[in-house]
Image 1 (cartoon, rainbow, N blue to C red):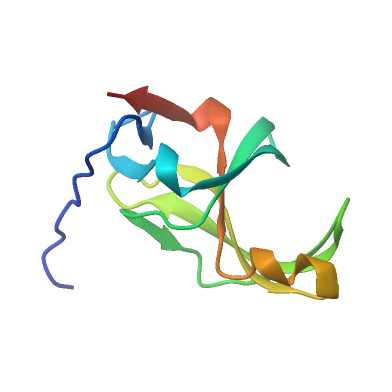
Image 2: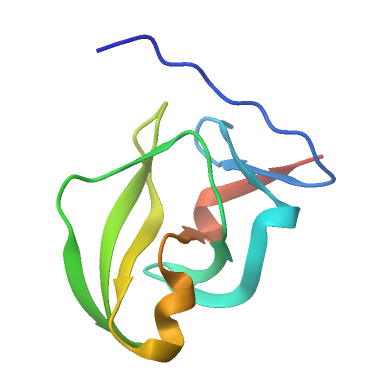
Length: 111
């Protein structure tokens, strides 16, 4: 395995892993604040950094239909932070493909 390089972000609000403070995304990458994760409120992000997906894909039936997801973990402390939408089976949900859910309870905000 090669060396890991931590990506540092700049912005008005930078969202980071609550456990190790590794930068994950910025407020400019939030697509929606009205999602729900496994532990409560969650955000839909268009892009995140310093995470890695589980190798195992999961099919889940959610309130908006069936999706294939991969759980995502912090690259530095291995905390599960949410998931990545790999496939949406409903046509009106296709916009989620390739996007990320980060659970609010697992995030901290830095300025």
